[in-house]
Length: 379
Ligand code: ADP
Ligand code: RBF
Ligand code: MG
Image (tube, rainbow, N blue to C red; front, side):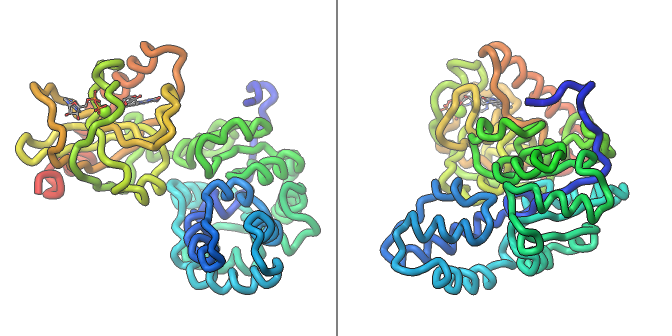
């Protein structure tokens, strides 16, 4: 999938997609469709998301009207859907790492274009809720400004032309399959950041598939590296979650020799969607036992290919007994790496021990250590 170094083209500018790449449009669209379809006695099936990701507004609307057999035409659907969507636009959140990426590239003078299958007017409205974003893009272009939307290369070709760049010099960042195809057809280097889980296999034409924008390494593509990593960790906006410790798959201690005190995922559905899967660390509090360093994974545990996204915190302390049912409070302060698959159980275990060392060391740094005293942990 990834090109050998000798063939790799270096990029001097970035062409980036909006929905699903920089902002979580799907979250709001799903909410609206769930309510809208229930009026017709239909139930929104999240699996439809895969069919509409990266499509033009017209294609997406046609798919929904046809798949749900709605008793209305596409035009009527659009005239009902768009006012609902416009009213919720301010609720569309930026995706993890999006703001950081835009500010980083802009701060280093890397020219950037926003190229989206959505209309120019809608792009402008959506980004108006994200402070300072508009000024970071020298070019903004919607599918109503070219003859064909993605997967046609038109949007990216036009964006490159407006930036005065050869498409071969452009790095495209995309979450959808049509977007990746469009970028490759334009002759650009393409990084895929799939917005739907477990879909990596669909992105074979991308030059690299990453799990989230947090995993982007601009220097691999000739762009300035991020400078915010400290001792192999990336500080994140601290995130607090807590609840009673529940039974997991029963394999943490048994199979890996690494116990993980699982939290119920039902209670954190929203946070789980908002945070990319990966290995994180922070502090863990148990009311009667104290505060401990903690390293955890969030995700589908690729080695075990779970069907559910789980939260698995390993408290870095030797306990003499289990603490199922006790209230566990976590403050997650930094990111280490994406979840990965491993050729053997031993190599997975070795990597988790490496994560432990990274976390133990990092948590002594003042910027992470200060959260140890946060009242949330033991309250
Ligand atoms: P499960 O699959 O039920 O989560 P594990 O084998 O992962 O089982 O063991 C996790 C349990 O072990 C926790 O719920 C907790 O009660 C206990 N435990 C003991 N020591 C630790 C530790 N250092 N970190 C996390 N959990 C621990
Ligand atoms: N599982 C994976 O399949 N891939 C990983 O990269 C991975 N990293 C982990 C890192 C840490 C720090 C911890 C605590 C767990 C990790 N696991 C990973 C999850 C592990 O598979 C899980 O805890 C056990 O399966 C118990 O359910
Ligand atoms: Mg566990």
